[in-house]
Amino acid sequence: MTARRIAIVGSGQTGLLAAHGLLRAGHAVTLYSDRSAEQWLHGSRPTGTAVRFELALAYERELGLAHWEAVAPRIEGLHLTFCPRPGNRLLTLLGQTAHPSQAIDLRLQSHRWMTDLAAAGGQVLVEKVDPARLDAIAAEHDLVLVAAGRGPLAELFPRNAQRSVYDQPRRKLAMILVVGADHTVPGSPFSPLKLNVFEQHGELFWAPYYHRDHGASWCVLIEAKAGGALDRFDGCKTGADAVAIAKQIVRELTPWDAAWSAHVELADPDGWLVGSVTPTVREPVGRLASGRVAMPIGDTAIALDPIGAQGANLGNKQARHVVAAVAAAPDAAFDAAWMTRTFETFWADHGAWTVGYNNGLLEPMSRAAQLVMISQYGSDGVSDSPKQRLANAVIENTADPRRFTPSIAAGPSGARKLVAELTGQSWQRHVLGGMLRIGSAQLQRLLGAGPARV
Ligand SMILES: Cc1cc2nc3c(=O)[nH]c(=O)nc-3n(C[C@H](O)[C@H](O)[C@H](O)COP(=O)(O)OP(=O)(O)OC[C@H]3O[C@@H](n4cnc5c(N)ncnc54)[C@H](O)[C@@H]3O)c2cc1C
Image 1 (cartoon, rainbow, N blue to C red):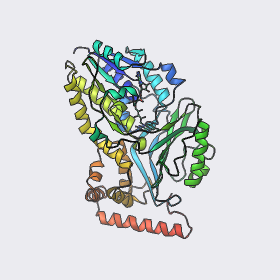
Image 2: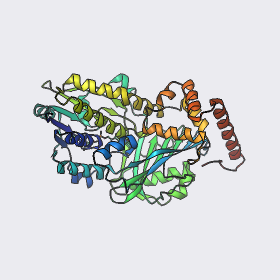
Image 3: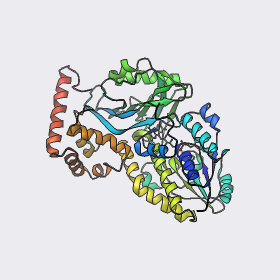
Image 4: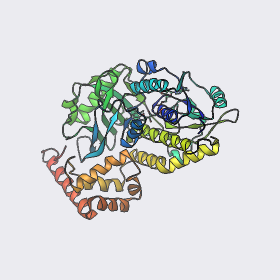
């Protein structure tokens, strides 16, 4: 096999995984980064939460990059509370995954993975690449991958209007790294990703997190609908401001979490973000002034709202896909046709399902999703019951949206079939049973006895 000269621009999740994969396959890899490993560790903000599920984590393990598996808090499932109005916990779900997930501080991770790359023989160059420089880099390499996130270099790749769906953000985001809340969570028998959904206002997540300095900690993510009760972070000047607002939100909208989270504090001065993401799918080929081409990967290719915890997972899957495509034909001309073929097979296998699943979460719950949520109501996270299998399927689909998204996308008939398949019983029995359990819990609430399940 000929060793090819491959350049990768960007030292985030996707660029570094692709770089390690290609280096291991015997290619001459040069990674261009706008910051050094040291600057990643001390002087950067984390670019996202990046909870990763088994399918994505497996690739990190395969490349020898799973350094934090033994120490990072395990995310064993999802504890979801759905409130049509604040104060009314209409639906809850406790679903476990077969394998734990994890979220590692991306500053620590990029620092370590850059250091590892240099130690393994990759070339790491610290410079901010612009389009003219990219053209010069393309002249010296057989293949150029751009993993520069959602920054200006992404504009080299035309937006695909049909696949992008939205042309504006659907949520306003605030992410805060905190310490001071226990990893044993009230109401959950396992260590969960906590999600509170407010139909009119947006979502409030708590993700177990491995912080650069503190280790086990939490990442709070607020997905606010503009103008709603979660939309309060515009004027934030410091992370401490953001923590104070988040605590106020918890007291007002999720009082059931107030005692558990009363003592949280900002984990470090850089450990917070506010902003938004316009979900965007780009064309797989960027043409440079000379006519040479480059290929986008990760957020540069497909940027997703973080609501479904998919971006970093999809980046890992795309890195693996591109590395496999190079391995399948190492002597290929890595031209526009190769880039298009490589992206289109990825789109068909993972991209389209992930984008469809993630965008669906930004919209009101579909009738099909409601059927599944109603049928699983009463899941407790531990029983070996039909309800529990449904609840587990909800979070397993987040780990790999190809699993059940097609059934939900098929509408209520697909959801009924899915309920019947997963429970081994008639869907009517489960939908009706779920409705009765929800009705009874609502009655208890109206009588002041609180929800039957938390
Ligand atoms: C608040 C929030 C929460 C999230 N939560 C999750 C989650 O739970 N699960 C999940 O899977 N995903 C999540 N995501 C998405 C996830 O963080 C991203 O999809 C992922 O980090 C993207 O990785 P990347 O390598 O493609 O890009 P980036 O992480 O953006 O890395 C690109 C890097 O390239 C470098 N760079 C940029 N421009 C240049 C240039 N011109 N020259 C040289 N270097 C350059 C910069 O250092 C930059 O950091 C979340 C995102 C946000 C915003």
